[in-house]
Structure formats: C-alpha cells, structure tokens
Image (tube, rainbow, N blue to C red; front, top):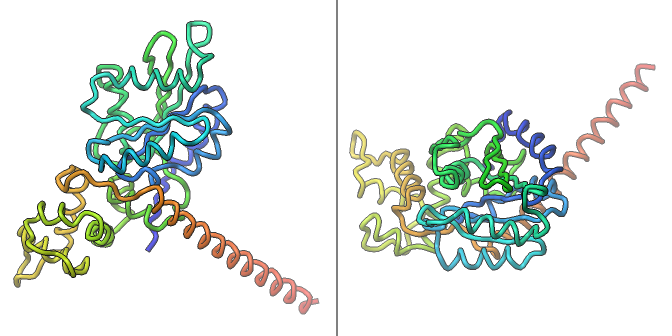
Length: 315
C-alpha cells in the first residue's frame, strides 16, 4: 500500500517557499544520504525555476560511502548544481557550505549584495542540527520526530550571508512506491501514517539482497540465504527476545527494532537506493501515475455523460 503524508502545515510551507524563493540566490536542499533520490522533493524542483542549487547529503556517516560517491557524482554532473556530503563529524561545515554557495553565485557577497540562501528538506533530515552547528548554539529546534520545525527563521551565518530555514516539507502525493517505504524507514514520515511491519518487511527485503552481511552481524544469524522477509523478521524477533505469550514472535516489536537499528546506524552504513535504481522506480511511478490520471479522466467523462443524459430525460 502506498504511503502518503502531507499534513496541513506543509501546504503553508509550500506557499511560503514559493514566495521566499523569488528573492533567493541559492537554494540548498538537504537530502538524506541513505535515500537521496527518495528524499529529493519533486515539488521543489518545479519552484526553483533555474536558480542555482546546492544538494547537501546529510547523515553521510550513516550511509554506504561507495553509494554516497555515486550520488554526489550524479548531482554534480547536473547544470547549476553542486553536491557535497556533510555529517556531525565535520569540524567546519559552515566553510564548506559558504564556499559551495559562492561557487554557484559568484556575483553575490559583501554588505551591498549579501548572499541570500534558502534551505529546504524533508522532515527529520538534519536541517536544524546543521543550523545549530553553524551558529554554535541551539538556534533551531531539533528532535527525532518528523516535523519539529514549524516556522521559517533567518540565520545570519556571516554579515553578508543570510540563511533562511524552512519547516520540513514533503509533497502532496508520493508516486514512487519504494520512496514511501524508504522515507518512513528513515523517520521522515509521521508514525501514524504507516504500518511498522509493512515498512520493516520492505526494508528487510532490500537488505537481504544488498546488505546480507550487515544483517547477519547485527542480529547474530548464522545464515539468512533463502529466507523470505517474513521469515527473517521472525528470526530477528526470536534472536532479540521479542516474544509474546505462547512463545510467538511479537512481529510488531521486531519491526520497531529493525527500523530503529536503521535510523541509529546500528545496522551499519546503509544506503537504500542507487541513482540507477531510483531512476527505474521513478519511471515506473510516473507510468502508474499517468495511467491513474487517465482512469480518473475517463471516470469523470463517463459521469458527466450520465448526468447529461439524465438531464435530457427529465426534459
């Protein structure tokens, strides 16, 4: 089942971004390095309208370093786009960010023409943590709950460098099925919008193929080849003591453990998609979305025709 989450404040944020972006020199989009494609906002791409963009892959210390390099190369190959990776271990994130912005907008800078930068990203991607690091104090609220920041704020990184922070925002409809699962697994989607077991099973299905050794090491399992995702979840539950009355595995608890281990990095450095994989998922999503729109239009036309026929009959 497709996962969707677009609470009311995100609609207001979308409107605020569209208005603010008119007077912005560079747009920073923070992406989760574990799911760069899924955490990129397609709605934002339409609003940028040719403005230079800086893609920051956050939490790269939790991501597969080989795949992070692939994603950085993917974005750096695009026109008017720079991409850099950041994590909590970096001692001078402000320097890297400022330098990248000046490369994208070399004519901005100085008190007469200060650099104006808008920073956007999905919920819980690390924007507030980055801003607090840049300022050296708790300038923005942080937390593990999606949607902590609720209002826009301006942060002066330097006398001639203004950074506008916006609340985390998704998009009205997620058309890439796998993106919904990846976003939920990462913590970007509200807990009431998805089923833990469904998300954990999708996650395990991917990890079985791409990160089997990490699974065996984390859960002390001798062999997992040939297991289905459901069998693996059961095995993890037994190994971690998620047992309920009658000796049955509490699969909900086991699912929560798996999701927590991904978010915390306990599973190891994992990235849930490559540029090529995401391109394929996106193509499938667009095709399914076009078919859905065609069915919706066909239904609307049929309904209009029936209404017209009834009106003629009554005459």
